[in-house]
Image (cartoon, rainbow, N blue to C red):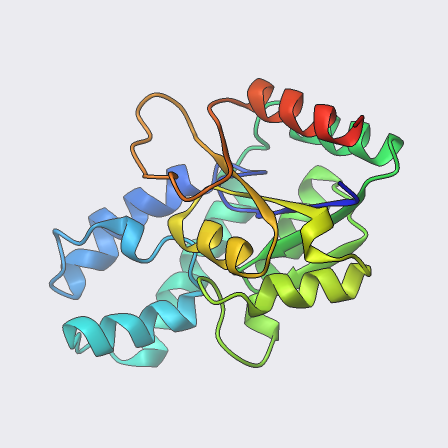
Length: 214
């Protein structure tokens, strides 16, 4: 294992714990999709979420209003509410000490990512935002293919850590080994497509450090 590519939301910070209630209680009722399974959109770039909901469910909210809702929610979620997940900072430091290249690969725009990096003092060898790339984001493989090229590794020599179905698919299609990260016993997202499922921060740490020490 030469590199680890971390998703941000739900892997490094507990933002999904905030996004989901915001979406379920406020956004979805506005667009008439109260019963939408949030796994359908979790992990996708918010611009592509809009396109998907228009194409699939023919929502009528204007694009500008939809994107403004996400930008406003993100200001509060990333700037004030999210917390770094247990052990995340120590895990990054331990991998760095072992010479593992570290990349952040997120569907969030750079403005949101930068708030998290600055708040928690996180450092990566490369920060990749699907929002800044031409072409489709997760679940398509392009963002992880770009990340591998950016850090100069063969995707087969990299491990991706993802919590969403779309993220797992994206990294897997790019040729990376994928760890599906579970948020706890109440998290019922199906991560069966991952090569390994980590059920806790401690489990994730143990698995990645063992891979780094091989």
